[in-house]
Length: 470
Ligand code: GLN
Image (cartoon, rainbow, N blue to C red; front, side):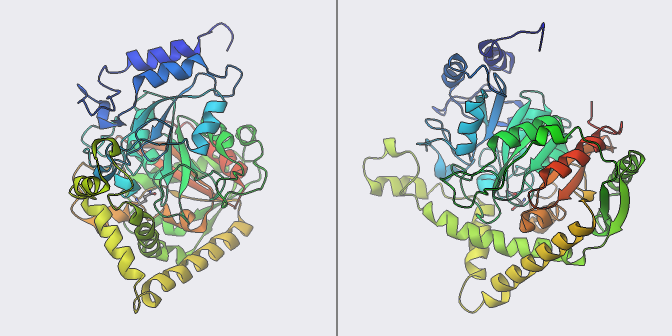
């Protein structure tokens, strides 16, 4: 920008000093004086300056401060997944997506609080206490990437990374009034992302608008030899796509997104956004996809089954504060007692059960069949329309504690986000107004590898005047 020259070091310093002095808790475990919305996890302050000194000034993200969810590896930094079982663990290498951001000049300035191992919809399952919603401190920020959403919505950083398995970026983006963008499964490398459910997991960005989200996703996307599931399809100009408008695009309003349990205030905001798309030249129709009603049930079998397999490695031997234990035996005893929290235990039990002999046919195999059907139905609907529209979440941000004792009601928060996760399709949540004074998210889902169209419609939807909450 002409006339507003700042150096990367100045930005880094401003982020570091301008924020609450206790914001960047030390990895030594020393308690921070305070921590805004409990959104952050320990990060080494010295690393901020070290990065600023060598920043790529010609990069597309030169000097831009970014916060990482605590399940993304960054060499030399703690990577704890907000779990006691990983307390003291320091990442020995850097995630591909993080390396790609740095190569474009981004500066990693912090790590964010999350639901333990990304299991949850409110960030209340963190071993370090709930994060809070910066727009309303008695409400949850959503989850599982709630800390990253709060960091952006609260104005600490313009960009943050989260991870999605069943909606963990779109849903907190919706609750916090910002943009959360999940590209097609396989677009972004999972190398360096701690695994939850490998057939669903994808790194996804939070941003204040669609162009920033498009830029970060574009920079991170593309084939990675370290992750054999990454796609080889060309990425394309996602940032440019944001400017193309919606004239002539076919927008299908999902009937299932108007169902029982969706708050009237949420429906009103979504209807207004659809109205605005139609005024801008989109062709609006209604689309029924009854099989998506099976999505949450299928997800609740498949995600825990994969999690049970992935989390078996955290046996107290291989991860944790190696330095403090003199023998593997000591380490085991030391970490075992601190084990997993209740939600992670629940998922491991559920997953182990649904894969066990005698039950697998009834649960796991049926869930896989449902997943195949949902995918086929969504893909065929997307032959008739260019994007599907629904609310991101049936409700606005709920109160802290309101659902934490009732896992089923917590899982319901993802009822509208899991279909795109199971089908691996690109989807975004953009703010579309307020209900009860709290942000409402509009979800757009597109064809496989057609992120460009999703971003076109999302950008137009936020142009409507009912857009981002000021
Ligand atoms: N809330 C969902 C769950 O608890 C999704 C989590 C996620 O996307 N990581 O599994």
